[in-house]
Every structure is written in C-alpha cells, then in structure tokens.
Amino acid sequence: MKNEHFDLEKDIKDILKKLHIPFHLQGYYYLIDAVVLMVKNNWDNKDLSNKIYPMIGENNDTSARAVERSIRYAIKWSENTMEKVGRRRMFEEGVEDINGLKFEFYGRRTNEKIIMSILQALNVKN
Image 1 (cartoon, rainbow, N blue to C red):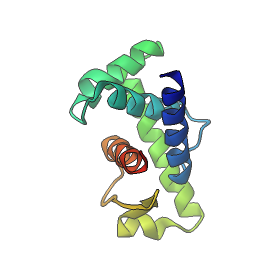
Image 2: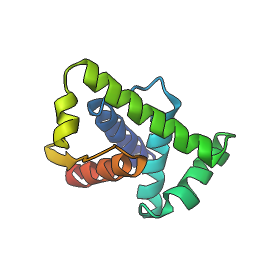
Image 3: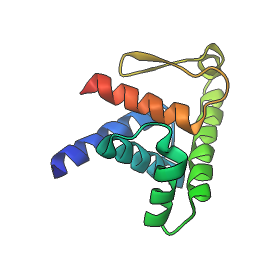
Image 4: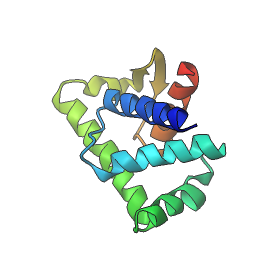
C-alpha cells in the first residue's frame, strides 16, 4: 500500500512538471494532496470545496481558503511561465498534451480543471 501511494505521488509530480507547475510553491504540494485524497476516497469535483480543501488546510495548519488560493497561484504561475517560453498558443487553443491525452483548457485554468485533468491522466496511465 505504501508503494502504491509513493507511485501515485510520483505520477502526479510528473504530470505537474509537464504542466510547468513549480515545486517551490505551496500550491504544488496542495495539488498533490488534493489528487491523492480524491483517488483514495473516490471523491469527485463536488468535494473540492467542502471536503478536500478543509482537510488539506487542517493537515497544514491553514484555512481552506488559503489552500484554494495557493493552488490558484501555482496555476497562474504555470500560465505565466508557459507564456514566457512561447507556449501561450497552447492555452489559447485550449489544448495541453499530458501522457498522450489532449486536455481542453478553454478559458481560464481553474483549480477544478487542473485537478480533474490530472485525475484523467492518471486513469489513462494505470
């Protein structure tokens, strides 16, 4: 069981790297926690605000709002980084390739869209 959890985290980190979400931001670790919680508890996106963010906040001595804000900041950082390296067109076209899948990110990348896309990429891999 412990190895499965480690492999899951490793896979999530690989996906976050492909999304250009930097590991020095707290939102990076909150994203990992959110995906792990969703997988372990078989929760869906409706549980983000009322279960997952509060649980992550409690485990990290912070508020659910701070967790959500940190994740949003990490996603925004990712968008800005990709714009600097000339990959902004991918955002405008609304497509990102992760593990062989095309993910649609029309409009603004939200916490929910990123988390659900990570879950989708994990399902394809496993």
